[in-house]
Image 1 (cartoon, one colour):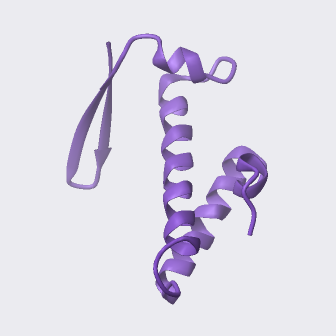
Image 2 (cartoon, rainbow, N blue to C red; image 1 turned 135 degrees about the vertical axis):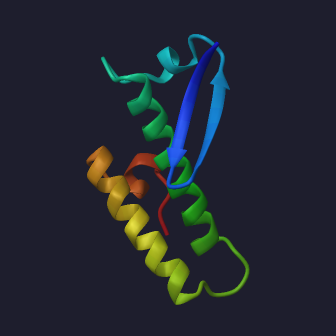
Length: 90
């Protein structure tokens, strides 16, 4: 098992993962922290996309702004858009 510590302003958490899981999805010589960061951003982008495009009703301006910032961060980190990475476009 490998334990990942997550610290934010004023709180923390731990995530324990099976040994070898990070190696299965590691890109080259990425650190464990970078692998977890990639997965976290992918998950946040996916969830934000779902709330914006597949939620009930029209998204609020706040949700649209959060999605735009999230997708910008995604493109900065991965060098491609969320749509290009997932093959899911609207």
